[in-house]
Amino acid sequence: MPTEPSLAVVTGASSGIGAVYADRLAARGHDLILVARRADRLQALAARIAETHGRKADIHVADLADPASLAQTAATLAANPRIEVLVNNAGLAKLAPFGTAPLADSLSQIALNITSLTQLTQALLPGFLARNRGLIINIASVLGLEVLPGSAVYSGTKGFVLNFSRGLQKELAGSGVKVQAVLPAATATEIWDNSGVPLASLDTGMVMTVENMVDAALAGLDQGEAVTIPPLADLGLWQRAEAARLALFEATRTGRPAPR
Ligand SMILES: NC(=O)C1=CN([C@@H]2O[C@H](COP(=O)(O)OP(=O)(O)OC[C@H]3O[C@@H](n4cnc5c(N)ncnc54)[C@H](OP(=O)(O)O)[C@@H]3O)[C@@H](O)[C@H]2O)C=CC1
Ligand SMILES: CC(=O)[C@H](N)C(=O)O
Image (cartoon, rainbow, N blue to C red; front, top):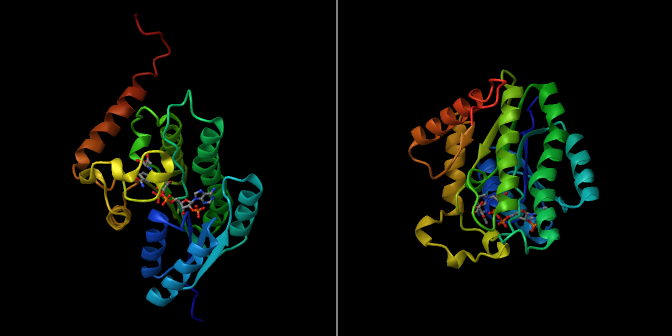
């Protein structure tokens, strides 16, 4: 009996990084479930994927920052045993000083960047574990490593994505379920103009194309990287930073106040 192609879910597939992930995963042989709010964009992408790659892409229109819509999405995905890949990509940035920013902007970033990613992962992970097969790609950001004025909440959400991914990697070690955290730096997408910092205001030399970003992230995945920073050429920098982080943690396990 021929087996059906595996299914990959991409959240935030209606533009930017998610749309390119959908294209690349279709090229790798996956059928797709494309999730976002803008149905017209998802439909157009699904048609392009069918034409270009001959793969089936279903669309699932949802507001993942809305608890009811998120719960319905999670239940729908959890009930589908063909899903083998989850790309937790949908995300929102509102870059403004926290003290004067609307509370709603902070809460919507937390709802989308943290809560929806967590809930969708929890929805799919039991099935992945039962089948001992699955891949979760969590899109964090280099702003999960550093905070700039105006990014307190956004960086906080991306720090969560990185540490959540690290925790899952430890819990799932030895299983057939893999987790990759991707930390893009500035990438040319709509997120910037919606963030309050126009894309046109960035130094073009520091901005990556979406295609290059996703292809570099997938190259890292193919090499088994747990954390991929697409523009980082010197992997020794990351390894030294990780070693310093672990050494710092170990140095806290004394049970005694430091002498100061
Ligand atoms: N571009 C960059 O410089 C960087 C981006 N990232 C991260 O990459 C990810 C993708 O962002 P990017 O492609 O740049 O930005 P885009 O704005 O192009 O894409 C964001 C996607 O998320 C979807 N989305 C937004 N709000 C909701 C919602 N409430 N419910 C469902 N879907 C939603 C959007 O679809 P719709 O509006 O149709 O719902 C869209 O498909 C994000 O997590 C972002 O934080 C990380 C580092 C750098
Ligand atoms: C708008 C941003 O801050 C961007 N998504 C990033 O993570 O660098």
